[in-house]
Image (cartoon, rainbow, N blue to C red):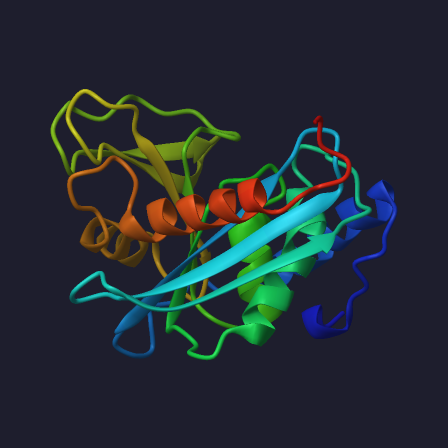
Length: 230
């Protein structure tokens, strides 16, 4: 099945079956061009609401200055199910992508790539949907085992699922929790870590993630959600 043709209106068993099918399309191949512009993607929700606040913020990788952004408010009807968040969140991100006036070379997604029980985290699913390089940058582990990296910025350790490496655990700052980096699509493990490190300044999170996180939360706070508590 082509990713471009699949429906997002699926039952939970259908979504799991689709993940297993799409897994065969993942390409963990070296980047085929220089990356000049990177973007962060993120989603925000109010509790108990199906209103989605989605955003993409594009940065110049050299300066980390913002060059474009796209924000949308929409609705989702797919339930919150761990391991299936891409079905709940990607349709909104695709709307934001369509409205984005300046397209980046690569996306750093707030979530996981192949570091997922079925290897199809949101970064991988979005990379397949857009046919472009993506990286998963998770704030916590979804699956896998690892040894904590040394307490020095830039220290790493592999994230394993049995004998398969599924990610890299990165210490971005001393005395902070590590990040969980995994390739999404059309990029290698080493390139994923290198790109994320280029986006890290004085904060634990890369600027791509930090700036889009702030943007979607500001959008959510400013928008009156009828389902949110008064």
